[in-house]
Length: 193
Image (cartoon, rainbow, N blue to C red; front, side, top):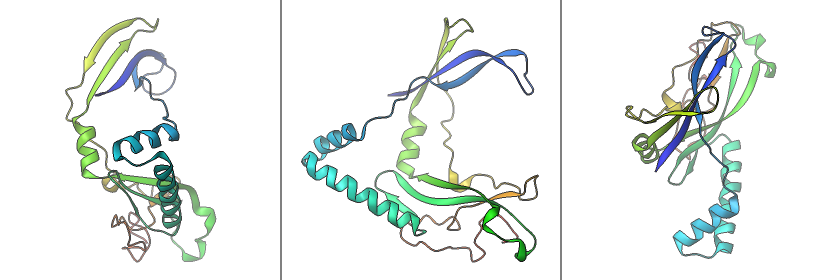
């Protein structure tokens, strides 16, 4: 199995490389699998009926949604954890704290070690196309297989223009059923919280 990527020669219109052609990588073709197909395959692999698998799938989805919206980091079996967070501007004065500081709400997925290892060991096949759409080269990855980890991303600088910082909602806890906030200040990346 390999991840398929295409590198297409495109005219860059803005930024450092404006008015030059550069090869830009993007997924070759990823399609969304229908829920019904996933349930059918899971039923086959587990030996239970599709009806039972559908009921379990629906129930698990409702539980995950309910617990995550109560502030819990919820385990997704075999995959990792999911939780909600937000991005918000920081302020120096407590009297300036208001809901309007929130710029976006987020869904944060943290993959477990097995899933990260699987992705790290999966080859990446790159097909290069020139600006006319002609295939000019194929490459198979020899990279380190580094996988981004949302729990260990560099912290945004709250003092930058706009002052946005990220509040993940639970102080970085991935315990699955703890909920709450490990950091009494509420933010795990803003030293002023």
